[in-house]
Length: 124
Image 1 (cartoon, rainbow, N blue to C red):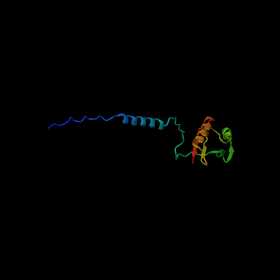
Image 2: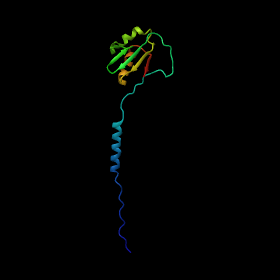
Image 3: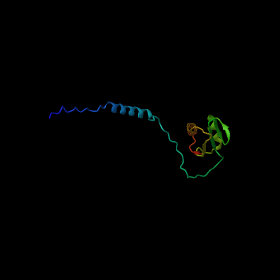
Image 4: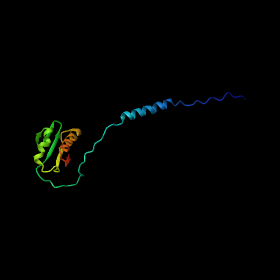
């Protein structure tokens, strides 16, 4: 009995797999976040301190800022807080209201830090 030639074994093509790997590589490169994260040092929850002096509540709204309920411009915030603070370590309370952006909150905190105020408290 004679048998024909043994069929040749085909080697699988690796081209589609390489294409998929490169597509995944491109996807993850485009989906990656390229940016710098910045942390804001805040006191731990539950730590209590003595409150001294007049209230210093800064409401951050999408349309502007208020200091103790009175509207104030962003550039004048540090000078408006100066008479209310005895030392730069006096606590200033920041409160984001009515859907204010986090970036706006960070900008206000940076302005106050640059003006020399070091005790900023963020409340909800």
